[in-house]
Image (cartoon, rainbow, N blue to C red; front, side):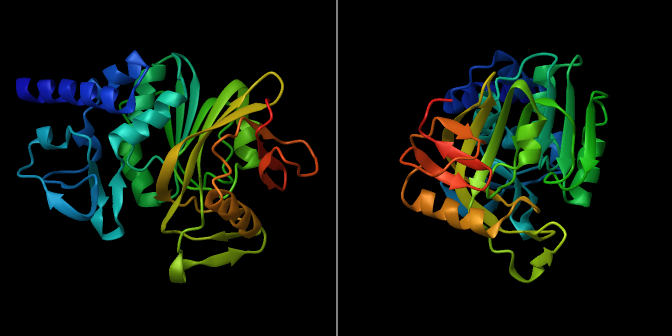
Length: 301
């Protein structure tokens, strides 16, 4: 037991250094939340960057092997993993979570990163975790049952209204920032969302004419940029956090938005973004990604 405690503390220090974490509460959560409780029984299959092509089995079912900056398979047949801690925690840290805040986590998987955020906001806060895959949602609900202030919902985060939130973490790729998410931000609310090109949905692709989006119960991995959006008294601050590769959000794809995003990514136009505009305006030199109802701009918010 002492070795496991030491492993968790070293892990927390490692992730703090690699992700340059500012939140002491998040670092403490890394040292306290048992990652193995969210991964199923070991031995586990892991991916250690930069090699992400072939899983390696841990030597045993001793949890010390997963307290490292590695991806751990949840379902290796789908290449579905518990994400890289330094990457996920960097994005969570950018939300600047405070004790007592209300958080929405879309794409919660089996709940590990939800648990970290729950530890940060504490019992006075509230966390709504949304997972599209019903099997994963059931696992997350079981794993998070010890936390009465965490609610797990099996739903499509592109249409499920979780109510007003101080922070929203979308852990699935979207073609554009959905109005539902932006409208749900409380004053001073923060949204972190991956804007990614459409993944290869393959034969699972289908179109729902009522929603006017292409949908799939299981999509491939899309590539793009992780974006932080901050609701101010007037307008929205926006900035790019990092590149990202992530599974696509089931209902957050739009063909035209995907085309516009692709052009912006290909031409490296998003690097100097400063704001998100939602007002109706003609595209000008300051518009880096000008879509229908949204525009990432170099103008100050």
